[in-house]
Image (cartoon, rainbow, N blue to C red):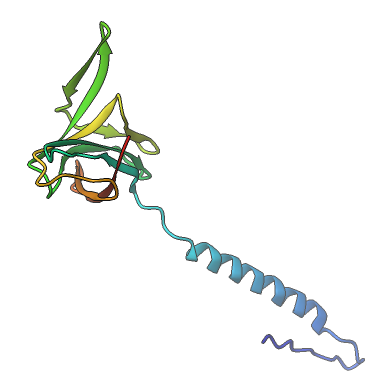
Length: 162
């Protein structure tokens, strides 16, 4: 409840109207500031759309996701791992002479400020080998992503059919 103080002058005129308008403007500004501070902070690095292929044989799968760099400096993806697998390495698929070739990417993958690293089918992706068990639709594959600045992101990739 907001109380409005009204001052009456010797002549009986109400001087509180202008003060009430000013108080209303101040209250609106305070509400606007509070609304700005209550908005969720954007994480410096974010992973979205993480998914992995089914793996019936419990041997190998591929994982796909997008890493978005909201930070003000370039960061590089340097390594990946999964507690459910022996190894997780970046690869790139490309077509040459009507044949698809897959090459490991040994170098760190830089992500500039405001940019993304996209891992998708037929391009860069994460090969996960030596799985400890089969992966069925609906399972999740935990992945740890290591970055050049020491950050580690924990990702859960949903297992699905392509």
